[in-house]
Structure formats: C-alpha cells, structure tokens
Length: 386
Ligand SMILES: C[S@@+](CC[C@H](N)C(=O)[O-])C[C@H]1O[C@@H](n2cnc3c(N)ncnc32)[C@H](O)[C@@H]1O
Image (cartoon, rainbow, N blue to C red; front, side):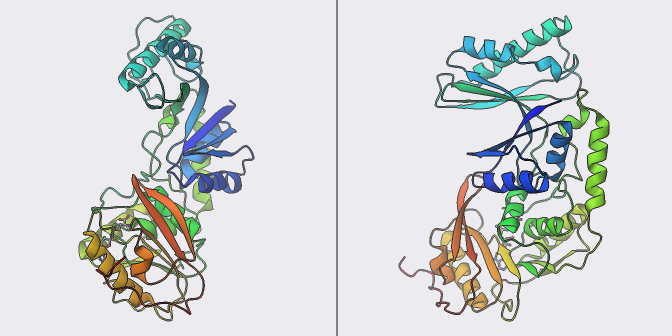
C-alpha cells in the first residue's frame, strides 16, 4: 500500500530526523517542515521508521488535508477519507488533536465532529450501525491550523521516546529522542571516548551506546500498527529481524556516565541493563567538578542542572563555573545543553557554535566547543554582574 507518512519532531530536530530517513532509511521523498517531516513509502517503510528512528516523536499515516473553516467542512472532509482501508469493523478509533489560529478552536467539538464523520463513513462501508471498538487501536489525530485540517492515523501508540528501558527516571530526565539527537549533533559514532559527567538516569550514555552498537531504539517495545489487520504482520517480523542482525556484537566502546548522586548511578545501571547496553557503558559516582578532564580526548556531552527544576539558578551557575574551571584546557570536545542564557559566561568560554533545542517546553541551547582549547578564559564567579 502506498502511504504518505509524517513524523512529528521536537522543534529543532526536523533536519536530524530528515537525515535519518534519507541516509539510514535510504528514502528520497523526505520533506522537513516546522516540527514535522513528511515522506512516502509503504508498510515496510512505516515499520522501519517506528523501529529505527532515534529522534522522531511518532510515525503517522497522513490521510488528508482540506480547508475546515466550519464544522460542516470538517465533517465532509473527514467523511471523504478512506477510513475503511485501515480501520476494521472491530477497530477502536479514538480522536485527539489540536487547533491553532482557526475558527474551529474547541477541541472537544472538533473531536466529536471527526468521530461522527468517521463513524458515518465506516457505517456505510461495513453496513453496521454501531461499533463496539473492542479491537486494536487506530488513533485518529487531527491538526487544524489557519482553518486547514490535517488528518492522520498514529501508527506508534506510545511516543517513540518511550524506548522501554527507562521505567525509572530521576527528577529531570532528558527526552530520549533529544539525547539521541545531541549525540548525533556531536557527531560521535563510537570511535573515541564518550563521557557524560551529569548522567542522571543515564539517558545520554545509553543513547550513545545504542548508536555505537547500531541497536535500533524500538527493539524493546511494540507499536500500535503491529496489530493492524490492514498490514501484513510478517513485515514487522522481517524488519525486527533485520534490526537485530545489524547490532554490532563488539562492546569495546569507551562510554562513561557519572553523577554525584549514588541513587542516580544505580538508576542508570538499571536502565542500561534494560536497554541491553550494560556491557558497553560504565557508570560511576563522581562530582563533575572534581573529575580530571586534562589529557582526555573524545566527546563530553552533558545536561547539567538548569536551575529551573533541580537547583535554583544561582547554584546552577556556581556549578557551571566550577565545572568550567575543572574542564579548562581539556582536549575533549564539549557539548552542553542549558536553558541559562548566561551559561557561557559562567562556564568561562564562548561556544564555537550554539544550536537552539527544546527539552519539552524548555527552550535551551546546545553549547558546542570543538576547537582546541588554547585561549580559554577564567570562568566568571557566580553572583558577578551579567
Ligand atoms: C538535569 S539532570 C540530568 C538528567 C539526565 N540527562 C537524564 O536524562 O536523566 C542533572 C544531573 O546532574 C547531577 N548533578 C548535580 N550536581 C552534580 C555534580 N556536581 N557532579 C555530578 N553530577 C551532578 C544531578 O544529580 C542530576 O542527576
């Protein structure tokens, strides 16, 4: 079946997801927009994307797009879509979505109209008046923007950041899709050392290990569309087997995570075990401001406390300063995500490059230091005038 597919992404990650599809999925129909990436393919493409994409939030089938300035237009547009090609007579088809800058702004009303239109279409197709909805889930998603509706079916179920290894999380975990994107932005592929000295629940080192081992991020979980009767279940089996066959057996990567809190170190070990990468990553308890960074090479990628959730801003800035002094002069390429606009001043060095990223709703920058660290300034003391 030929399918128009769409992956929503965190803002700032559209290009990275497009590259995953182009270079790893070998697709040539990829188009990135604000917060989403469109591509086309078939059931195999859809299964591959769910299992292998590291930085996308979901995989949706794009069913149609039409003007929807009134409930009548919305109803007729939805009723015209071929729901029966996907949803069987016992399928459950809940509706969710959002609306922006549009006359139709009441989400419950839009949900009700869309449901009614889909029911009417299916009633006609199956000659049924009532749907029990006891079978697999076919989540309908809508987005109405500037009076135009887009209708989708969600093939993923739980968001793709839910890899299945992080049942436990500390207070401020980084979304797995963002952690994987940062490893890609650091261009780390397993050839040199990797270090996260603020590892929390271990997300960054675990995602780095999954990338180094070429282990597909979705291998531990299932996806809604695996149960869809419109697709051949054999395809999912094949795609899973191909993903397993690609895993590198080699565990000789130098990946380290550490955290000051021993409970977080235990959590990271637990999560790495669940992720199947415990042989590949080593976790220790350590104060990041007391680690010796001099003489080390490779990549340091970290998500220190922001001062919004874990510590107040002043303690976070004091920590950036102490961390900056400890890592001064290192040959490690450093990639640090922070929502503090004054991060560079406290860390003591202007980044070679910055990249805007969103950690959930928090606007952050990834501060990248990859040039040799000859002319490093002394970090500013906390409390000093900004
Ligand atoms: C924002 S969290 C990291 C979250 C992590 N990326 C994850 O996905 O779970 C920051 C972490 O820094 C740790 N931390 C705070 N001060 C530290 C220090 N001086 N040395 C090492 N770790 C520290 C905290 O215990 C916390 O786990």
